[in-house]
Length: 78
Length: 199
Image (tube, rainbow over all chains, first blue to last red; front, side):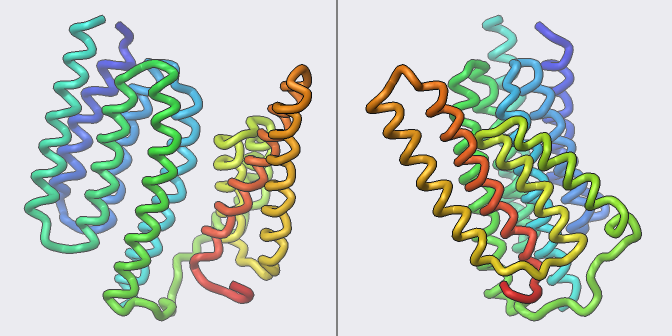
């Protein structure tokens, strides 16, 4: 099996641990750490040739990041 | 092949246990929302391991449900915490003045080339990015008009499939263009969520 698959699985597990227990524990740190398991998922999708899912996941992740940043922005202002 | 699949499944289940353990121990609500996003990524990884066209067919609706759920939860959170007023100081950096035009053009061009749902999402990102960075003064009634035309195109494509099936490729092209318009138009509304005129 391909290198991408094993790399993806490893990054997924490491990234999950990083996003679950971020240090220092701020919203922004956790948000940035969330990109790591997303990268793992992208590599897994790449290894199985799921092009359409991969492209849509990238697009939707950009939107969800925007939605979360908006909430964090308002939380910080209050 | 079989062992690989088992290995992947075990790793993903390990991640799910870690993620849900963090979710249980978490007390801050906004941190919980962020962890929900993590849970969504892990669920998608589980589906991606199916590794056939079925996986793609399952991931696309999963993504749509995920983003709409996230938007709904974040709105509920904002209303419940009473954070409805605008922040005085918003993030504004130099790259937000120079980048939008060319980046939006590239994303919309590539989205139109892709067509269909994914193309609509990519083109929508371009429009969102432009609206966030440059602001917006458009009247959004025009998006409703666009949405109506997209519906008409859907129905025309449906009739082509049913009445003249030999022209199926024409029908596919029309349906692909229609869903591009619909998804891109709706997603571009997200770009106005920071507030402004005519919303």
